[in-house]
Picture 1: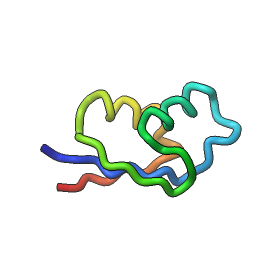
Picture 2: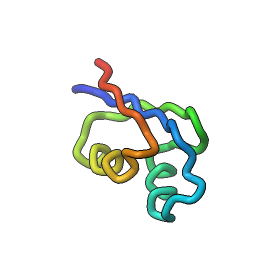
Picture 3: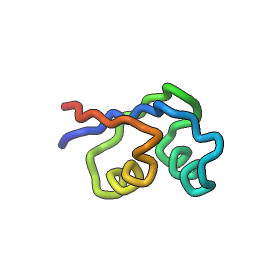
Length: 60
């Protein structure tokens, strides 16, 4: 199964509360944190919510 490498590229300061909670749910706590998650619809939806704060790469 494919995996997603999610990197927080922008700060969440000044963003909405649900965006902060979504970043925390993904496991991102501070700038330049990186997590690798399975490519599932749940994670795709979370990334879509905070797409302006993160970058996503597919890894094998």
